[in-house]
Amino acid sequence: MESEQGLPTPRRYWAIVVIALGITLSVLDSAIANVALPTIARDLRASASASIWIVNAYQLSITISLLPLASLGERIGYRRVYIAGLMLFTVASLGCALSNSLGMLAATRVVQGFGAAGIMSVNTALVRAIYPPSMLGRGVAINAMVVAAASALGPTVASAVLAVAHWPWLFAINVPIGILAAAGAMKALPPNVLREGAYDYVSAVMNAFVFGLTIITIDGAGHGESKVWIAVQALAVVVVGYGFVRRQLTQSAPLLPVDLLKIPLFALSVATSVCSFSAQMLAFVSLPFLFQNTLGLTQVQTGLLITPWPLAIVVIAPIAGVLSDRYPAGILGGIGLAMLTLGLAMLATLGSHPSAFDIGWRMALCGAGFGAFQAPNNRQLLSCAPRERSGGASGMLGTARLTGQTLGAALVALIFDIAPINGPTVALGVAAAFSATASCVSLLRLRQPRRAVV
Image 1 (cartoon, helix red, strand yellow):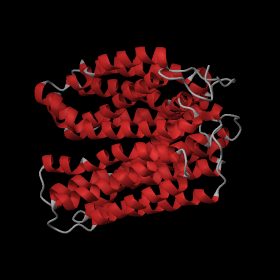
Image 2: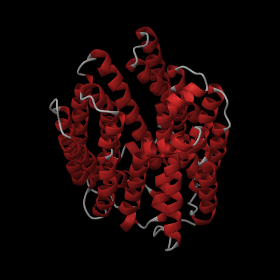
Image 3: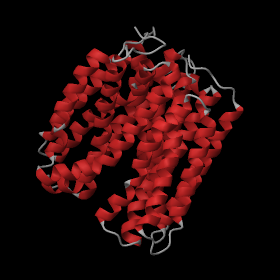
């Protein structure tokens, strides 16, 4: 059974390797699909706009199922949800590789997304069970480092595979890795103390409706859909969302963790996460347009110039994780996000003929700032929740990240529509504003008493 002192070595090392493998699969599969979209669309004779569903189906199914699966993990065990997610992801990957039509591929991507949600929903809850409280920051930092590395390697892996094989192999390579990770998870991952009580299926359905329709509404607003239809969707979200929140307030362990949001440190950490990931996505979506359309760089040059950002996270995240076990997340996050704000502002004010070095060090500054924020923020969010509510905290962490990323991507589309000429520069300025807001929110945590890890 789960111990507050985590797992003994060497089992702890095997467990974190399994966690890293699962997260790598789920993150890589998002990145490689983006790169392969033109090839897949051409091969399946689908339009470019229709092929976007290969990405959207995956993201949407993750978003609507993160919190329900996190809540399920508190009742049947994080280990079971994680292993089931890995198995489902692996089987769906095989289905993706065998798909011969856009409809079939999109459908299997939905299933794959549910598997990825099983991995992501309880990932950090398992990290908390694996590491003792005094080393929790290091465990969270390893997670952040793996995510950054997978994000950085995604386009490279996709390009390498497509250079020697057909696109189905992008999904087929997941199968042996998924089988290996699932087998390791059965042996290495710890069980947790289960929460009693029936699972709230009604809340799970309401959660899916609210988050799913919210994402669709935001995306539709960013892509210029009918204002009347957007208003109808937004009204539906508000009405059902009100009922959803009212229902959660009556639960002892709600699916939407409103009980945890009553903890100031938890709520501030969630707000910091949403704002920071909005800033990151605003930058990630707009920077390729700045480099290629404004500065006239090639796709290869763009890929190389974006790389310093995730590489800096890989370097800084472990250091920030160790520091977060000793110093408040409020100050570490505040400093990191201030660095991110400065880097974004300097990218927004690049001259018309910057050198690769001028761009590279600004990108590295952004990555270093984001890396300095992420691990301490995630540790704070986890540690201020009661241990038996680690699942809810883990699910909320993933939901905050996806919400911020979706908001950032939608804002880029809206900005590009309003300012087609200077869109990338404006988007980077907005990203800097979001990052500055996140830094201020992070510093507000210094006014709250620190909660011990329980």
